[in-house]
Length: 221
View 1 (cartoon, rainbow, N blue to C red):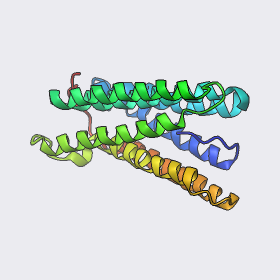
View 2 (view 1 turned 30 degrees about the vertical axis):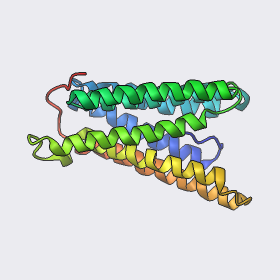
View 3 (view 1 turned 90 degrees about the vertical axis):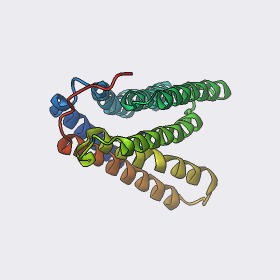
View 4 (view 1 turned 90 degrees about the horizontal axis):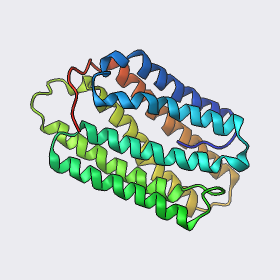
């Protein structure tokens, strides 16, 4: 979730990312015996990469780190969603989505210089794939009779947080790309809206760790 500008918006984003990672760590006992455990290192990797790219490495050298970040985050989220699915058909569909995600990044990197440009197109496409994957998960969740209180399902809240971001990101991306208002105020407004989406997304994820019940059994791949 990229915020490049070195200003207070960056600090806000990194702060909510760290809070979500801390919540995932504190409530790790709730999901440590499930495949959702892989979410913990991912949630720490996200702010670590933001801090590294914004405060340590020079801006002229941070492109490959953000591009690698985009690939890792996108594929990891899809893999985690796949691990939460139960039906073979949907798991198979997720495999195709993961392959499509990887192919999109490969194509994007062939069309640009990944050492000097962002793979924004592939990340936007991957955001759409993640939305599709999350919708598959939500549809499956509605069909599982044994879930009596889905509001206490940790991954349901995490899914909601991911949905908030990945639905909004393509809209913001295309607004920035095609609604060329030529106004600095317009782009600043998009930046603030982007940060608002990120904050809402991570607050939802953080609440999910707090509110969710302990997951008793793992869902196998």
